[in-house]
Length: 159
Image 1 (cartoon, rainbow, N blue to C red):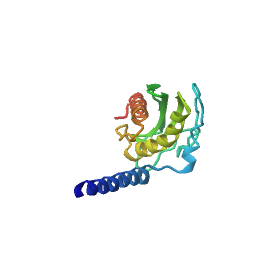
Image 2 (image 1 turned 90 degrees about the vertical axis):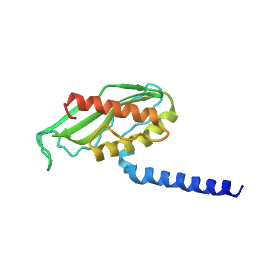
Image 3 (image 1 turned 120 degrees about the horizontal axis):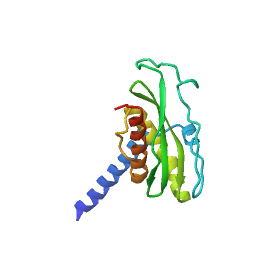
């Protein structure tokens, strides 16, 4: 029975390391949390996402070609509500991501989305793709987010 204690300690250490890894790699600045407005059933949030592109969308970032282009992905239904994601690209590089529509079924889902969406946004901007890892505990939200991003990228013909 001495081994059982060792497994508990090793499991706790691995879990703690996993939590640190998620929070260390996927945290977003406090300003990003302000992009989502709390709401109840049927509420939507229209964030004013900061973007590196000017209002006219004609600037070119270093390392990319062409003007900024923007598309909004399909509204994705998931277990606890629905969401849609807008993407801004320069060439094939994703330079901006926002959530123009977020409706949740309950306050807990809204709270979870406020924590998860900045992490997902940071991951998309890091990998410049919709092929992102989901956030543990928010599997449905993560999948809906990735699907909406992919539909926006498809509209922009970005692979």
